[in-house]
Figure 1 (cartoon, helix red, strand yellow):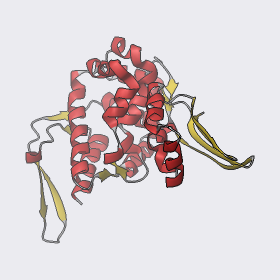
Figure 2 (cartoon, one colour):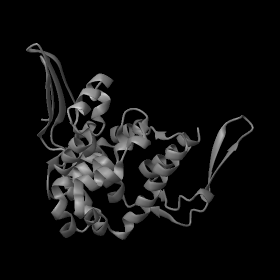
Figure 3 (cartoon, rainbow, N blue to C red):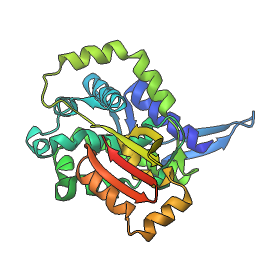
Figure 4 (cartoon, rainbow, N blue to C red):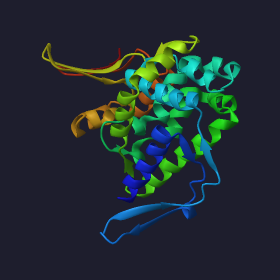
Length: 274
């Protein structure tokens, strides 16, 4: 219940009010049980609050919309929000995948297990030595948002270990779809890109296709969960390193590439981003 209350507080403040509480230390949150036996969240010290401009609020909403569509000119949105274009140009083809990793817990249509996120490892694999370019490019006004978002992830991680806010995100996107569309059209195009491709898993047996299923490309980060224990054991015996496969996918910004081809007897397994 504490997890849900903090999540709702953050998302309501951000999406509906455009106000961020930017000092999410433990002393600023408390819980109490009221006379009806309900749990209430108490938030203290709004001295570090930040009121977002209309462009900042619409910009964040538009980024979420682009991530759900897996396509859009995220660079144009960020530049409009005050990010330094000269710093972002060197990573422009990786900005959308970077944002997809950063906001992944907000978009999953189910409870997101934060212990399986591996955000730092994935961002480092995606950007390598250029991973600081994004932070250097960020305007000072972005810092309260970053602090607030980190606070949300921290508390949800310690209060249940997961989070589920996609219904609030979807409701916001639906209620503001016209405003977001107009805002998107008003932005000059800088670099339009997409999160290329889909993760495809194909299994052939005896020359016949037994499985052919696709997922969002980021599912490669949990590809082992798509395989049974026996298959994982055989892959390990054959020296196939799934972590190395994930690393290659990150370095390639999740663009189309073969990831795994394994054959045993009449059974063949193919995994690729297509």
